[in-house]
Structures are given as structure tokens and as C-alpha cells.
Image (cartoon, rainbow, N blue to C red; front, side):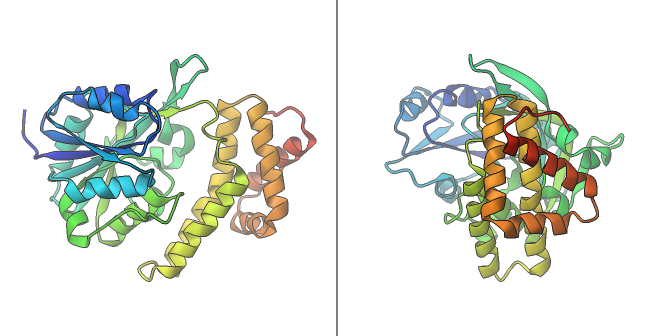
Length: 333
């Protein structure tokens, strides 16, 4: 097997006792062996630390934070000690196929080092109440058919700055770029901190490669799409936009792009709830949307303004809002 250099895999974990064993095992089973796994226990109150300590693999570097500092802080701690030529990010409740590292490194190694980062499509899996994982589909194929069509017969495409915002991914990137630019995750944000970080990568001139094949299992837990109430979501969006306003590296076009992205998340979150949570949680979530629009009219009018050219999108969302407000059943739109 070709050696592409050491990969530093960063895995922050907070109260992840139900999932972290499977997550770590899926990484240790990689066919590409030259990696270090930096597990950062972010002040967990459950058995996360104990489970992580049970692994005796010498490639694991376990960092124990005594207080919960947030995912950005945990990632930054790991970035400071990462030794690899490459950096990869993982989540404590997700899984990797064994071939993931080898596959992605084989592709990106064909490009000039330090000019690209790479990610694969995500396989969405929702967790049933009894803990069983059921494959739901591909992130890009389901939610972003326009981007999926760009593949055509190609296995890999280059993703532009305007497209990357709309795709969930966990990339592999050259550590050289992160270290030279001293990139860090913003610790003052609790929403969109990864988008902020990756936007910095793009602004530095780094380009993104996306593969059609999927080697990453993204776990959707019961209620996870509705755990963050819409009002709280909007407040976090406002905090994100304030951070953008104070960052001179982002221009007006960048800021408008992020605003449109977060506006679109209202519709996407609503549609995902319809598909994945056909129960009372959906009604509760959509009622929250009605309340949020009433309390935050600026958001409602901003959504309308940004979608004047797409009346179907406006009508579809309004139908959902009306149904939720009535407390009646939800129909697919």
C-alpha cells in the first residue's frame, strides 16, 4: 500500500458514551494504517472518557478536558498538537467505512499538495427508537440534486465557494495550509463554526474536491433535527452574522452568501423533519417556526425577498407554516 503521509484524525467527544466505541472502532479498522487519532474528551459527564481509555492502540492520543469548552475549542486543542501531513475530522456519533482514508488520499495525492482539500458524500442514517441504524440515502443526491448532476460520469468534481455552504461534509485537508495561516475554529460561535473555518480555507485559495462515492455514515438521532428550536436557531444565526460583520476578511458578497444559506436552512430543516420525523415532534417544530416568524418578521421578509424568483418555494413553506399553525396533520408538499 502506498504511504501518503501521516493523517491526524481529530475526534471531539462530549457525552458520547452510546456512540464513541463504534466511532473509534470504525477509524481503527481503516485499511490505511498511517494515522494518529486525537480524541478530545470535552468535559463529558458520562462514560465517554472511560470508553476512550479502554482502547490500547498506540495510534490514539487521548486529551481530557476537565470542563466542557465546546466543539471548536476541542478541535483547536487537537490542531495545536496534530503531527500529520493531513488533517481529517470525525464526529463521535458517526462511522467510517474501512476504505475511507485510503480512497480519499489516493485521489487527493494526484493533485498538487497544499492546493486542495477533499471530502466524500455522506450516507445519511437515522436511528430508530431501539437504536437500529437505517440507511436513508445520500446527502447530495437527496437534498442537492443540482450539485449531484454535476458529477455526470465523473467520480470527482471541484466544488466552488458558493456550493460548499450547502453540503455537509467531513474533509481531509493539508495541514500545511492550516498551520501557515494559523486557522482555528471560532470559539465564540455555537452554530456554523465549521462553515466559518472552511470558508477561511476557500478564502486562502484552497480548492475543494468532492467524490460521488460515500464512505462516511452520518447518524441522525431521534429528534436531533428538532432539538435546536427555531428561535434558538435564529439567535445563533444572528451571532454568526455579527461575527461576519466584524471579520474584515469577508466582503459584502461573502456576507450575503451566508445570509442566503441560513435562510435556506429553514426550508431544508422543515423538509427533513417531514421525511424523518413524521410524528408530534414535527408539529412542535413547525409551530416553533410560526412563532419564530411572528417574533422575527425581519427573517420572514428576508426569506421572501431572497426567493422572489422561486414562488414555489415560498408557497411550499407557507403551506407548512399554515398547517403547523392549525395543529393539523402534515402532508408531503
